[in-house]
Length: 161
Image 1: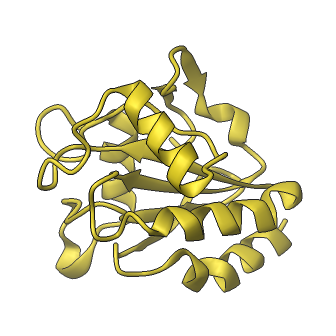
Image 2 (image 1 turned 30 degrees about the vertical axis):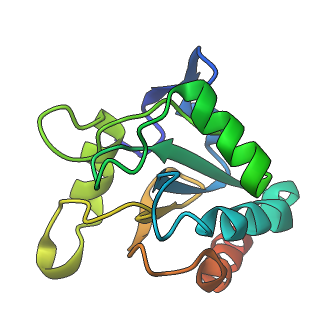
Image 3 (image 1 turned 90 degrees about the vertical axis):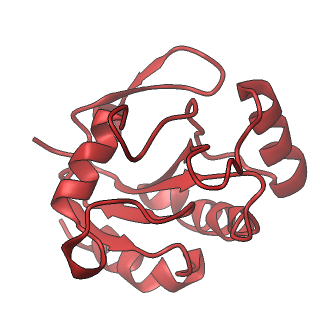
């Protein structure tokens, strides 16, 4: 099973089969609009713009499980991200990344790339998972890791066959 063997609800409605991203390098991020890390939307959009024509995607998954920092509706989240950060990469409907209602995608990501000391729990917003072209999980990054710090790993994966 790969990270792209799942479906997810889009922020604007409808379901996306993540298999459509096979053959691309994909960055999956749990996001929030009212977090200290929210300015990372700028960096995520920057690397998306830099690499999208080379086979790279950023997928944002809003989550309200950390300090209730994503309380808005889908419309409010989309409007906020576009107006304040110019987000053009795909955003999905709000999900849970921990607990009994964890989205199956995040169950898979956490099992394949545990965090510090082997913990599978997502610690905070803007935890990032880089996915190889074949859908396997390459690496997990802490919320403090800026999108710019991922560039060399992205370039490496884009260059691999």
